[in-house]
Length: 116
Image 1 (cartoon, rainbow, N blue to C red):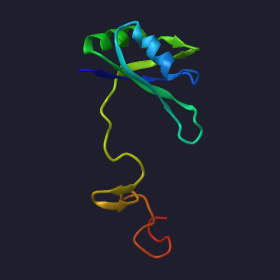
Image 2 (image 1 turned 60 degrees about the vertical axis):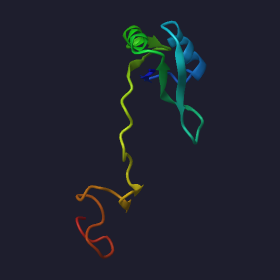
Image 3 (image 1 turned 90 degrees about the vertical axis):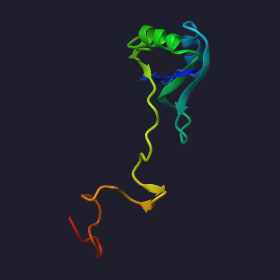
């Protein structure tokens, strides 16, 4: 079973291949992906690496966490599963909603009436 690792605070110069080569010295890397901004095409400063086993992943985390890359101290830890329902609204199984919070918004009716 493969183990997914989160790598944060990456310099914008890091590419998928350089990320993969840095982790390859600890063991077999299944995949390495630097997350890119859709609009600018620039790196978002973080990525994910998938390693062949948990032992190899833990060795890489221990060795690389806090390491300086181009003057930036990188963060390396186990990736957490993606949380459902992030963002400020959108369509879900319950229908469209602008926000789940009741203390923000335009109030209960009229043109901007309510809590303002």
